[in-house]
Amino acid sequence: MQTADLRIALFSGNYNYVRDGANQALNRLVGYLLGQGAAVRVYSPTVAEPAFAPTGDLVSVPSVAIPGRSEYRIPLALSRANRADLERFAPNVVHTSSPDFVAQGALRWAHRRGIPVLASVHTRFETYPRYYGLGVIEPMLEAYIRNYYRRCDALVAPSQSMIDTLRAQRMNDDISLWTRGVDRTVFASDKRDLAWRRARGIADDDAAVVFLGRLVMEKGLDVFSETIAELRQRNVPHKVLVIGDGPARGWFERALPGGIFAGFQTGADLGRALASGDVFFNPSITETFGNVTLEAMACGLPVVAAGATGSANLVQDGETGRLVPSGDAAAFADAIAPYCTDPGLRARHGAAGEARSLDFDWDAINQAVADTYLRLIASKA
Image: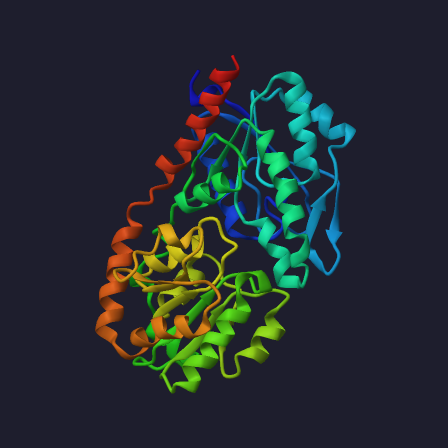
């Protein structure tokens, strides 16, 4: 069997209705598979006005809006129409990308037919409750996720550090790497635009500390703002550039008085905004890879990040940036301050990061997933 013989049913909790790193990776994977002659059918919640057009055929599954976070939807169950569509499509492998209710139904459907199931891990769902005062349920959520992942035939995760975490949590015995690539037509150091900076009040010799991502608390907004407060208390010269939007924007603006909020950016505008910063700061511990970290490296920015899953495999401490214990605002400030005052250090570590980003080629990365599909099908046979 070859890649062109694959028939993949892909289940996603969010394939295109809100843009994020996970669904960007999934859409790119589907595009690659279709280009190799494989057949792919995607099952996901849909909305009237999605963030972007889906790659491939998209089938809507029943869902409801999440209370308090209505931009996201909870997949409820495979409908009778969904099951009939699956039967007609006749996949030879099932791929799920979040351990939700629809994925549970897809897993049972596949098991009854002897079809292998691959689960891709995109975020650390079990860590989310702690950002909303519900840390007490984290062990229960981890147990639920473990129960799901252990019934899958295999997992793929985007970083070795995430694979190590999943193994320590006893999520599955068969876990392989599906890393991420970067679009060099969008993200590169030559996208830096001094005029764009000046128009936003950032002088040529200012050091702009950048946040990029959806503005939600689980991205570490509290630690970011505490670190900036620490830099200000130490009188470290810098500006703050925030790229992105989300439900916590009002909170973040109040926590970062004087911060420059560029709003949501995409495509070439995103590449220009990111490359026009000077230091990238990623305090999040919820990512399994950290697409934004790789994009910042491709733009020639040194990266200061939490030494957590994802970033720990991208940032070379002391060479392309700094890795800092998660949640330690004072230690983050210690790491960021030298980049704000030493342009030569910024340039050296930024150039080293851009060179390292060249190792991440999308086609080879996505073929690794296709090879895992083929291996699981052969094992079932």
